[in-house]
View 1 (tube, rainbow, N blue to C red):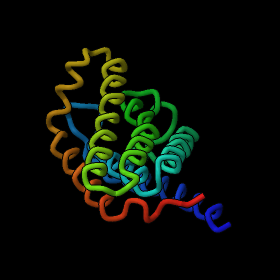
View 2 (view 1 turned 60 degrees about the vertical axis):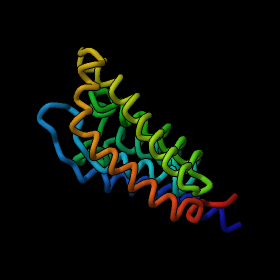
View 3 (view 1 turned 180 degrees about the vertical axis):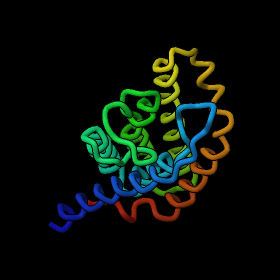
View 4 (view 1 turned 90 degrees about the vertical axis):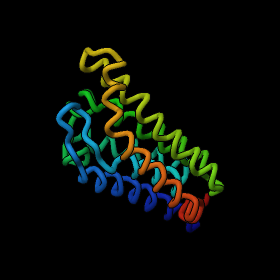
Length: 175
């Protein structure tokens, strides 16, 4: 009986975690996509709360942002963010949280690393493809802009790996 009250709290915590992480933003002059802590929060949400709750939290997060709640990077909101150059990253959040949660669910170090790395790769795959289409530039141009942020994303993957290795499975709501 307790689990039915726990998963809404986990879902809310996931939404809140990504919304708070979206406030930590470093705009870059050469790209429309700022560096933020959202990617780390997405990986942690999926890995800590599980694939289903993590993906669900990201869908709720996107819905809140679309409805005008200022939860996107730098306090942004609205359909312009979802349909603009950064929309691909946002739309990839549920998939990245789900994949990270599914792979890292047992808390083994290699699985945690694989889940976090694949989750981050999915964010970039969808995000960069969308960015190229939205800006009308070749995909190679969008990928070239990834170079300067690759180090921060590697750090996010490593932090997520360490946290998930220590805590994966402990915060997952049980059915």
